[in-house]
Figure 1: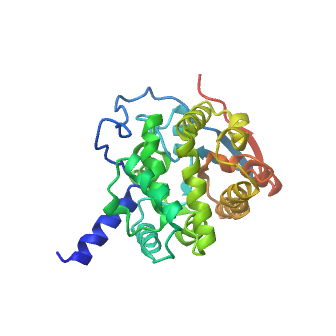
Figure 2: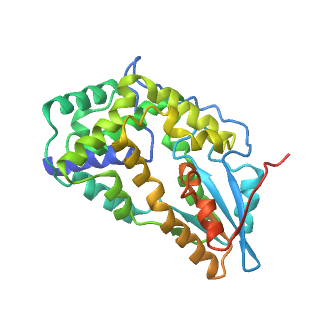
Length: 310
């Protein structure tokens, strides 16, 4: 194996950490998540959406989770069983998606200013990640990987996020799995190319980690998602510690609100083709003026929450 191949494999492993677990290397590192499974229960907001005499479902997901959270509760399992298509933002296990992610994460960009580079390096060390494995990655990707590693301090891990579990459930049942977005679109939002935008993205990601607010915010978000507490999720900007100025607000709007009309169009188009769709999208997309339930109502759907099973 030549040096270039080894370097690419290290970088690919770092990118794969977006979807799989990250190693903890020392006592003060983010600890492994307790693997004791949680009881099977209904978690996360779920809506029935009806139009043209046919029912589909909209489910708000969390991209991180705890053991057992990836197992659907009774109401979610029933909705999945009644659907004939599963629609996700992206299929996280699709090799084509992973190729795009890796290619963009490895595309050269301008280096960070020294002070910001020092902050990022400090965060990488604090999360007990291998600096050599991350060095070739886009700086914003490095910051994302650090955040996912640090999520373990909140007892959360990508291994138990809902998207991968739903993708496996779709394949296991023979249901078609449809992506509502492209990897290129998500990468364009997450990995900017202009130096000023890169610096802003890295600073925005590191600030909650450095202030110590990130763990508490993730715990609060996870708890609100578990209870399907949309009021708390909708108020995310006020308590996440991640919105310090108008630039942060605009970035969050770009990440969530601006993508919602196309997501709603994709769900509506699948339903119009005669499918009963189980559409699963990040829970933050269910809030605000451009909330997906609201947009689907505007597209002629009757939208109603599905109460947890007794």
